[in-house]
Length: 192
Image (tube, rainbow, N blue to C red; front, side):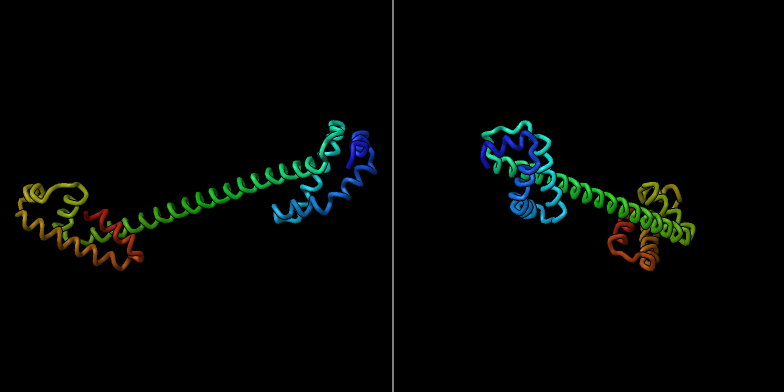
């Protein structure tokens, strides 16, 4: 394409513009498709390139390498499209991760509350003295010696009651716990 052709474009010659479109239609579409892998996007980019050329035709330089100019516009449009897609994919992935995390945290929280409620019910089934010793030790953080003094019993008795209470609770929990990770979490959070 020579200077005369570019000058015809600058003047708004529709036939010159149609000839330009016909000249680049196949090559430009294939270039866009090779990078976007989308017929629709390739057609959109093809149209956008020629819209930009027509809108900016008055600013075309007569010495312009039209081929390089057309493919530069196409390349920039394709890169913009790919950035947009990458941002959308990243956004979708982040959104999915957040939804999954919220769902997981909510589900874990509900399950944990259920297991803690079950554990409280099991503790209530303990004989009165064992229940009191267990609560003083595990929930109030008192030592075996402090419990023994408070209840007026031997420290060895406190230790035996704690061991038996712990065994009883572990046995009762195994009927409810379906996931070993949860069972360890509950057992460690309550007993250790």
